[in-house]
Length: 273
Image (cartoon, rainbow, N blue to C red; front, side, top):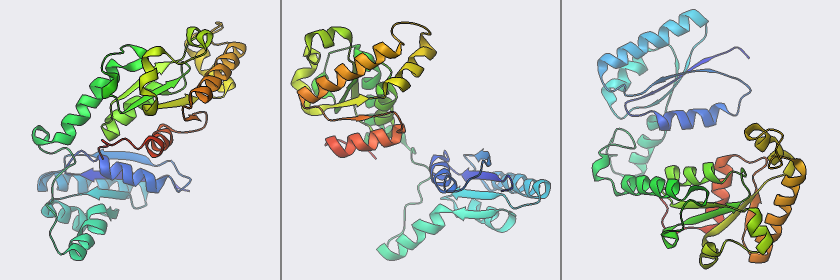
């Protein structure tokens, strides 16, 4: 398939356009060239975008693909009428039919993060990120009762990126704790976590993959040896089974898949979309 250029144009951050566009493009075996044009919020900027799209069409000899999320109809009209790209307008596809179905006009709000000073959801999201950073890798036992999720697992099993994703994407306060040799010797979870078992979720990983990851950080160390990785993973899984902690293997799963599974299993009450 010929290489194509894909434009993501928005009068806001463009995050929605890019997320949707990439999800659609993932269905095709292609590696498009991405061009991001956020904050295209005036007619002048729209004309500049049109010139860039049309220049690309002339150079490449094929239509660029253009994903848009535009609340400003004047700006969108410039792109619709002037560009030589294949236009996929999310708001036109979804918002306007919903206006007809619901019998009300949308508020045509530009961007997911407009007027953040008045947004309780945004404030909650920032607080969740702060909490997750403060409780990363077992740094703090304070305020664990305020956690929505507590992730446990051996070192380098994916706890930190999953915690931050849950905080940034869903506004959840996620703590994470590494299971270490002292825990295996005691044959029980860290004492500070025991009162919060209902909030806990375990992450495990295939020992071979864990050894690869650890060798990138500490090459040729006992920490990264396959023998040690097999021992730690086996002990951690046995510990989680004894404690009744739900868990999954992160070996072949994306952060999004891991987080979705956690949300389905724990169903935290406070969840921001």
